[in-house]
Length: 171
Image (cartoon, rainbow, N blue to C red; front, side, top):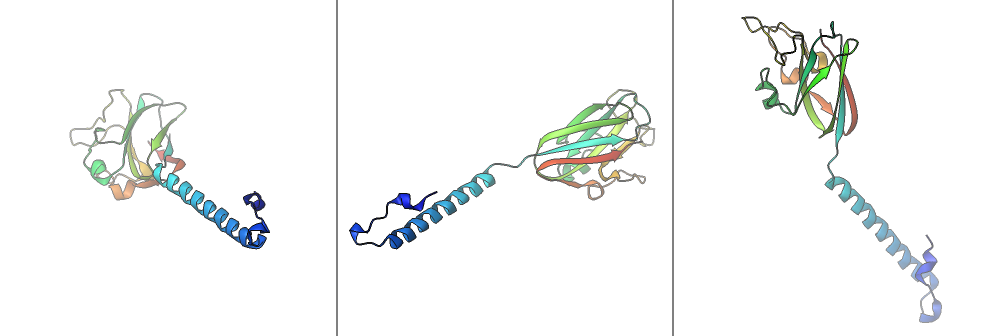
């Protein structure tokens, strides 16, 4: 950028330096306005995130892994074993003891995952007469099951803008 392109002449009784200062101020103001516009555009466009989830430790390639991802404590804790309240619900094929899902187009924020290994392919978590799962279950943060499903606080994790990845052991 050449500041002299503004046209500085001493024929109007102004010094070349006076015009240069005005030109510099003008260029500086344009730069600030341009930067503010860029910041404004960035704030207006929502950031998106992708999460790749690796389920590891599967003892069998039979069936599928059923995954439900929640974006609020209310949805997570009110869902039981159903996926209707889930932000995302997917069925994953198992290959060589692992299952992988990439969930794109997420809003950055807090999430929690519930999953189970659907051994018999009926797409529901099977339980015994006392309500205890008879199929392997897993939760984000590898939160352990102690006579109850882990709470939101135990399973919540943060998804940042851009690419994210987590692993969950299921057995």
